Image 1 (tube, one colour):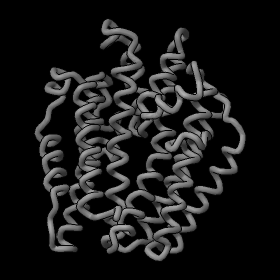
Image 2: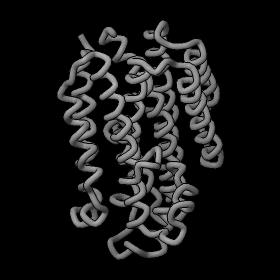
Image 3: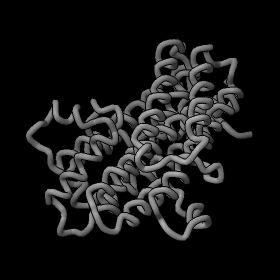
Length: 313
């Protein structure tokens, strides 16, 4: 496969995943803001910072209000990571690789863009935010379903899935970080009822609340939830699951092309660290520090994949 085509598939699904996960990050911040009656600006600031959009946001706004943050992350075309920007970028990449996609996948991506373009043509109020975020997640699921149901399991599928899980791992890590490092009011709140409520909201934001209840109904604690989100390979949005999937799809490419690259070894090392890690080690090191290291390693892996498969040039 040409590197340009591989890159188009990879980025198409990174952008689609980013759209959904921006919605999930907004939901995490929105739910947590509801638990605090004072200084809600710090919650919204943390959402912008965790999304990686603070520099661009600060050029446009001097404060962090709910309306401004919601608009910037959902509708602002000056923000390259806003939902409207990334769904447009996903559609552009889909057009680039149109001949590599089934009709169902192309139509789902195109419908995703048109539906969200129309829905986000007007500002979204906090009252309307939950319904808007649910629509974004639904549209993403429709594209994912078309991919699962109609695409051959070949290198096209592998590049699409690698893009999905590289992006999902990054965003799950950021959603965890927005809770523990930025939103927790003080160290004295660790283990308190407020702390546990916020962790429960994180579970809901990654669609993992019911799954956690099925597996560990009696242990609704920060330690148990963090362990679930980091290390449980059964959870589709855990760090361990995402890295496992990335590693496996890279391995399929190695078999397909009969060649291994540096990215394969990097992914294998990340997977081994997650398999051997424990939540006690994470908290001893510091959850924020652990998450920051993971995000850095994940970004390095993503850059290496682009280089190995010649997405550019």
